[in-house]
Length: 595
Image (cartoon, rainbow, N blue to C red):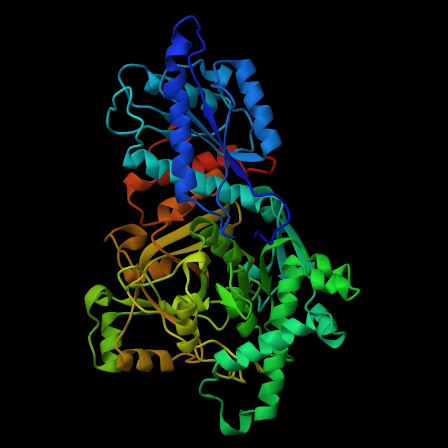
């Protein structure tokens, strides 16, 4: 079940029809409603929410031939909690009379490509009407002509319907939820300076601030589930093996000190969960206010430096929360950012809502050229890594799923939604992770960081939301692959940074031009110190989601054929990316007000 307050959004399908009765409408009723049913089945067979529930689809009670039918449909959708709208038709309809006019609902129109009736003509008229009214809508039109009675959905149409619905549901799931900021700005990182207006205007998300001293209060006053703590501590001792202590002998801590730190980081994990989404056990203990949580769909922990100069770091907390399992078993991953980097948390959330999978949080740390690798290791990079690699590594939030110890039906490494993960795969993720003591120079208060490397070759997409004064938010997207270096090469490169942290060696797909001229240029053009990495090539899905939120994309390596934005974007001039900027500026943030 979803741990968030509020019902899950539904998808509404609007079968629109030529309203002329005495022959025309009657001849189209079955075909039009069958289109709606086929679309509903496609969505229900292929999509689930990140919490595991099936997506529910609502179809209008009747076909929609005019204003009265449209109003009845809108009323039903409001009562049913529909927040994503797909209109389907095989024929001509009365454009503005049958359209969906809810300005906050992501909307698309699928016009059947058949010669018997002018579904494509209606599609063009409807999209023109939506553009004229300032209601951007996605247009879906198959490349191949279908016969009148053909109720199959072509592959290109299916891809667009599912891409639109995934993005629309992501928009709807964020609305009304919270970002939980535990602490505030970390080490002067701009992304951790939470912009409350951006969250509200673009995502419909409120910002909730809790000072990190609240963790100390709850630990000191015992405001956590004590039974769960004992269970969690036993599980941690059994499954989380300490790694090599890289500290100098004089800086190393005793076994007793480390045991105390383990107890504290486990308590921190329980408390951060409770702060995000509440815990009814706390109410039973007499802590009613604390039991309610913050309805947080994502969060972040400031950590450095005030907390970590004094207390154990939150690396264990962040890694476990972002994983698809803990001491309570296999479950939906949380979205929880290290260093309270809200912008990277949002980027992670985009990936999580689109894929249902756990996400990686990494520093975009180092570009290694082939020449540099050969100079320091004596070995040449080969395969897809031959032109250079990017070292993704961070002390905190990367999910343990990123060990890539889960496997697909063919035995290849992968990452899965939690409901497809087996207990054996969980154990492999844990067995391939070590937990070295934190380096004292970085973390005076101690703690433990996860240490693993991601297997190759996983298709991956890295994205990052940035705020640019004078423009607003922009999104960067890079599709590529993880690579697995020979162990002797990995060790030499890894030892040059902090070897106590998890590593993903990443190769972007380059094009030879622009931001993707080569691997170095991708690294050089990246707009922040952090990136959010998702399993799979989901760049096209991210582009559609960004358009729904009016966030322009300033860097991507997705094929132009796969870019899917509202039809109105084509009215904003030549060049897909320039038009994207102009359209987003024109429409403004989804929940905000233009100056």
